[in-house]
Image 1 (cartoon, helix red, strand yellow):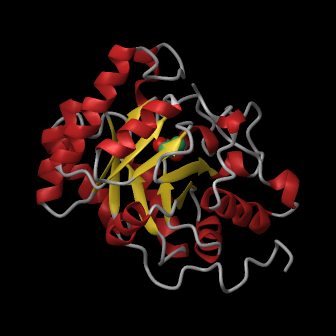
Image 2 (cartoon, rainbow, N blue to C red):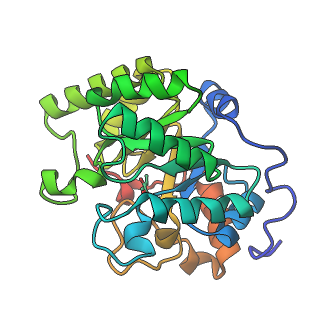
Image 3 (tube, protein in one colour):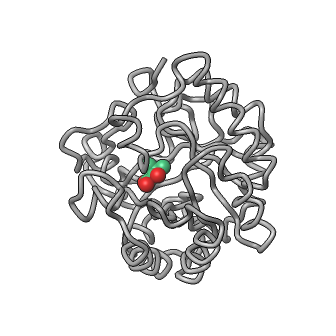
Length: 275
Ligand code: KIV
């Protein structure tokens, strides 16, 4: 079958929920996440069997032309979440809370409510132990939370650049402790971005919620890539990403190949991993 036709066997047959993703962790089968921003890509993701879609604040760079996620606003997020939700009614939809919209629990509740009402089924926020109380407060009110540790791009100015995190034993211990704390606080998923593969493996084994890696090696429960990187649209692509369009020749083919390669363990390969 040509790549341009994902084929009915690839499409998600029923809505993916957090329970579905927990079962993936328990069974050891990898699941697939794509950060994307519009209705058509969202519909294609559903046809290609992508279990979760993330409307990431990476849209600040991939769509809006900023050089970081810091300028992204709630209005940007809501516009794109509504578009994605119109295109996809099967993948789990995760919406990012942008920079400084969850700095206090009150802000987090108000803005997470808006993200959910725009069509997301889960919110994502960046940060460690300091967010544990906020995660519990949101979870108790029925708002599922995806936490995000490692290279948290909203803190790029504090990090002094987009750098791999967790390379020293002290940093690694802090990230592991943060992961445990956030899982205990009620987070449902955890994104690990740009951390050594061995640390991501330790965290994935240590906590009972699914981990989603990006630049975090092969041993997380899932992988996420940004659609622009999958399609080779990024001028200077990050080491952890891969252009799947060159080998497949069309967009549905590229998306389907990414899904297949995550599921069969071919992606990420040795070139996409940090030690
Ligand atoms: O904003 C985003 O797209 C993200 C992913 C890269 C995990 O946070």
